[in-house]
Image (cartoon, rainbow, N blue to C red; front, side, top):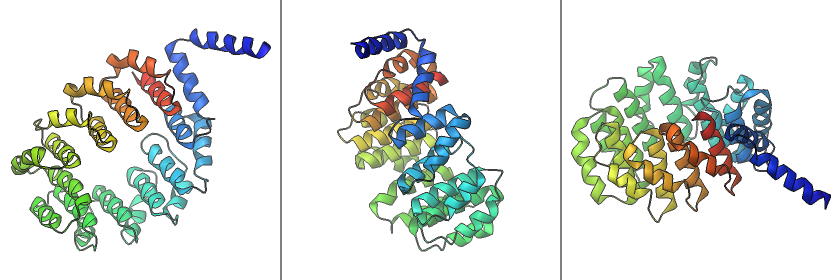
Length: 321
């Protein structure tokens, strides 16, 4: 009987909290959650010494997926100890090394240039991509040009994109030729790379893909058009959020996190109720990024969601609104 009374008391106490206090409480509880993914998300949003200790502990995990997820989540949000980042750069797992080098490429307090120059020799193409992209800020044009001879087409495309952004001509044509040798899973990133080079002559080709490509490729084409300040693909993104394929829905929500497209806010709001939690989480992040002030009530409601990760992401969104 005492236990039931205590539970009712705690429930009433929680109901009396302001939305801001509830949001902070959700994040603080998230630091001790049994799910590493929940702890990661709570920690990067809360910050502070306790959160840093949680992330540091997660970096000691034997599960390389947890280590990589921790590194990825920390980029641009929490300053992880330099020693731990450098150790991660030497990890036997390619996904951990790739995430670690992304941090190196973004940090000013680490000898990034030396580490990135070393990592262009990494056995894993994903690490080499990150290394070449990171060397752009050091104007290492000669090293980047060597990357055009990399054995992996993904790396060559990424290097061509980087050189194009540095002002080297004909890189869009180079990427177009490389895509003829690429497998279907690489075509999407190649389309984005061509758009990043800034060649507006490609707009008609991207518009054509909006009707002819697979669902995933249509989303890539819509993003490429947004990069080139063309909004022809907005309707494709709206429809993608309602696709039968949850991975297409996530893809669209990720694009709409990177780019502000007010015409899709209603579809994103509906997606926060998606039965696949990863879709709902990404939709919340997109709205938090672009329409937070107008979504406070929605974030408040989502702090009552059954899924803990969704509650944590909604709480973080509310605090940023």
